[in-house]
Image 1 (cartoon, rainbow, N blue to C red):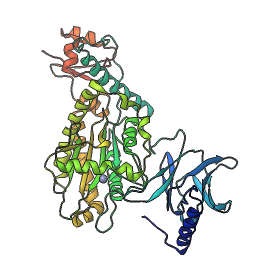
Image 2 (image 1 turned 90 degrees about the vertical axis):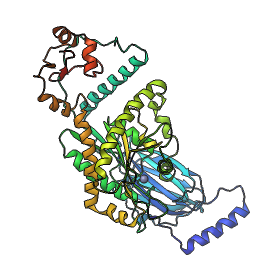
Image 3 (image 1 turned 180 degrees about the vertical axis):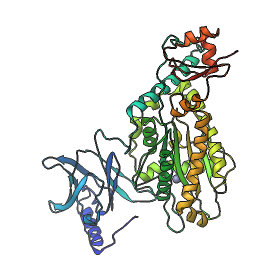
Length: 486
Ligand SMILES: [Zn+2]
């Protein structure tokens, strides 16, 4: 999608530049605008100016009416701003004009309040010098359909309980947890299990490109939407889209959104590529903290992690990553548990994907993918096929194949959560509806406390907690407890 204007004016511009540089070596280089691209995300608009050379820009705001001014010293406009599709962005009109004879002024008329930031990016394999202007929308969510705040709170409590448990076990006090066993049972929430769906790449980052010109970013977005429909159409599940149209999201930002939306599971959808057309098949990847399981896995992780360089992240994003400070033993412990879940789900998913397409690797591979580094969300990356293989490129474009591939993925995920539903989920509640009458089982009644239940069954609180893998001090009405030794 890289449109470069090669008109006569450009050559004149370059010649003029050469003369100017000779005349005054201290003068800032001219950064003629060759092309303008715009990406509209739910929480920001990104305007990218393709420049002939690096140039400094001044970006400031003017009010009444609300507009942004971008001044580029010693530059000219080679692109046609009128061709830019502004729909879905914060920009209602874009004008440009010459200022002080040699400077370029671009004025954006705005339809909403924005917080601007801008940065210059050096050339990469896709683009040359770029000025990136991000117009962020204060208070706006990065996703179009954020989860219910009450459900988020319930999930937050669940995560906190797991953390507290991990902390207690580090301090060696796991046998005498500091929980109150005298709290009365609470109503059983029936929250949805949140599946964060991450379509890889997007915006300036096309991902891999197939032999007949198919962009990875496009087919994976189509597949993500198939998956979204499957998830949202299943009772007890809800999808959260990390991106839902063509814009770039930084790799760290992707895991942030998932955490922000209290995801139970994160799945990143990709299509593989190789130098030769021969390799084919689908594969499933989980994170490795220690090193890649194979050279291919390592190579692939390096290539997927390069996305931020192409997609354009200015490197400051990690500063927002407060949770990243959470390190050491606790992190390791949480990570291990999460990774075990990832591998289990990965196995389920891989098996089902194998019924739709050949498998490139017969087991779940592991490598250091940045996008999979959430300490407490099981995460997988699926390579749905090789876009560099002509036959698989055709398949990846095919709606029917996309649908079947995503059905296989969701089948694997659902199988896992049906077997291991999070305690506060609708699935956990449903599972317990058919239980609780047999021997060795007890269904929690309103007003029950854990210590009372323990006393009534002549077992200790910690025995019950252990037998039911209870985290924290919350018990739920309707929840079924296994009573040990009875
Ligand atoms: Zn990819």
